[in-house]
Length: 128
Image (cartoon, rainbow, N blue to C red; front, side, top):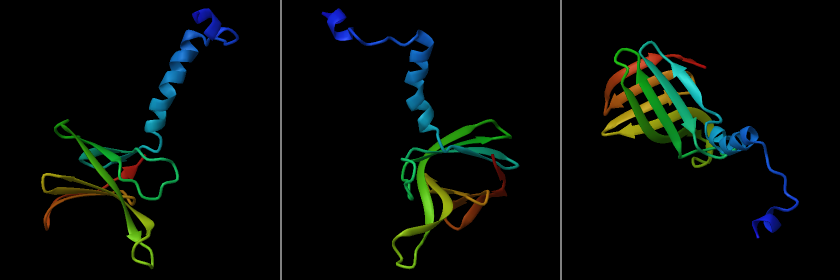
């Protein structure tokens, strides 16, 4: 019975079949960017469809260059509103929140970490 189902189909070589399985995983990281500052390496991974203006499924993977400790957060994109006050226009960066602390990663390479009005980290870096 299995022979009837597979009749006429060609099997992929094992290496090619494995690569085909990994393609969806590679697409998840598409659009990922890394920000390097003096003290941190921050990898931003959007998990939204290409072409979406606003994305509420963005991942922050930050690593301290001093301690080696890492932090993973979920967040979203941040945009300046258009003239109508509702529609997202100019892209500003990404926002993540964790236990009263806000992490803002700007498109200009700024990493700003705040708790209320207190600035915990403010560094500029380079996107790569």
